[in-house]
Image (cartoon, rainbow, N blue to C red; front, side, top):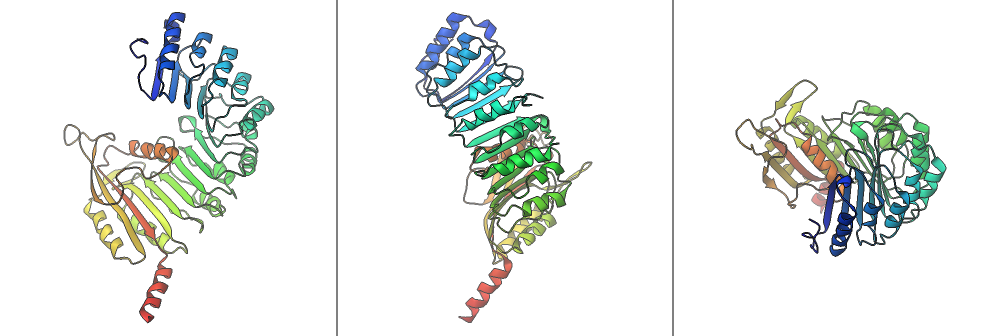
Length: 422
């Protein structure tokens, strides 16, 4: 098989299987094939077992992205010397993702001194409970070019938070495995977040409201914050605590939130861009949100994505589309609003009128200047948007995407008054 694929012009390759079925000769053929892929930039291994010979196939490749994981879970870092030699030979590597089964001192050695810009660490259950904080902290600090750090944990890990202290990263994602992000040690998390003085973008994936986590966000100097559910959206129960944290973020310019139902949260006046994704949003809730934003003191670019439905823990009800269409007409008559997009996406049934599927195609109608269904430029937000859509109820046939530029109504009246005098 390796001979057949020799010399292809592919850019991305994902290898998945049981290494025990490969012998050394197969490995040598694989190594030659990988070396012949002169355009290969992304390589992913998902194998049941690794050997020294398997690591050797990485030697000298020009890849920029490397993903390492086990076939049925985390990676067990064995044959460390061979792995270290191979990783250090990847002179163009910028992005590294490691899915580990158990934390080991081997991980510390693998990461030390790499020139990567992005690091993604995933721990199965207790995989990122760090018993050796100081060596791991030194290893992370040695990543002088690191800008983006993504961490996925199952449970609270004070040692991990301590190891992050003082890094010069600009972007960080905190994910809860299986939707769980159970932070108990608020002091350790708060101190670590506060020490990240270069941090500009923070993305958090949870499935349950977390008062402790909201407290950990207080007074950060971040410019962008995204809150979403690991499997789509989440419910905000502690609205006041979240509002207090948001109001304390004096530098926040972009806020994205993915919720199951509408929640009126207080927002800082520094905000310039707001993205709200909601599985079910009633017409009056759309009007209420726009009215709240119109009462602000600054112009805000707003993106709303929502399902045309009413939903709670026990009931789901589709709302007729014409009740939302009238909103477009109302918005376009407001002088302080600029409607950049009002797009209706109609989910198409796959086989019959009852067979609606989240992944089924959508027909699009409406106004707008963009062709893509995802308006977030970075990959983190794009992934969150995909989860938002995939998590929606199969009964949600219609989805609406609205883009608005909202100038405060008070400022609009002042401008109109000055204009009338001249």
